[in-house]
Image (cartoon, rainbow, N blue to C red; front, side, top):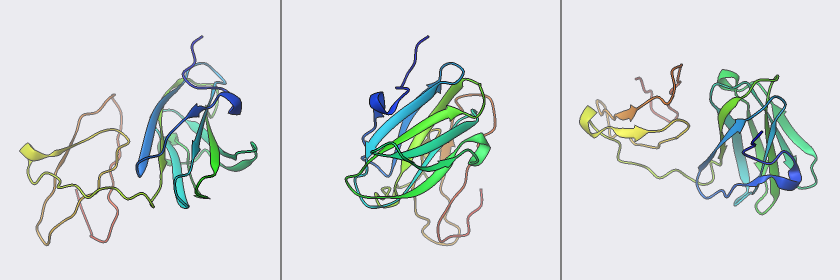
Length: 173
């Protein structure tokens, strides 16, 4: 049986964090498969680690010695989500597994509010809509009352997808 990521701390897949939201695709390839990832925090701050997809995942965060720092299995839509204060230069590990014995794909996201998203000039009509990928975050700016911004989205699979905004504006969509 093939396996996309290491099953132990010792053979964890290295993830380089260079953006506010770093994503990597993974799969629980067989029952009881556990995928391990490792990374070094580029800056101090609160990082959010989560999965997206249609798999009921459990996530655990470990320090460099392999001690569990945090765990979660109750994020949005059966995915895990946890937030932890990281120290710049420290090595961490994350494990992803299915809540039971299921298999399937997921996307792991590691995000830091300290590495800001660039503000994009989002499309201002349907023809110039900015494309949005599954698991991607976009940052935009509304320029006043009545300003509209558009994004386009093509689903990867049949199912439900959630969209939300955060910020100082009261938005609707």
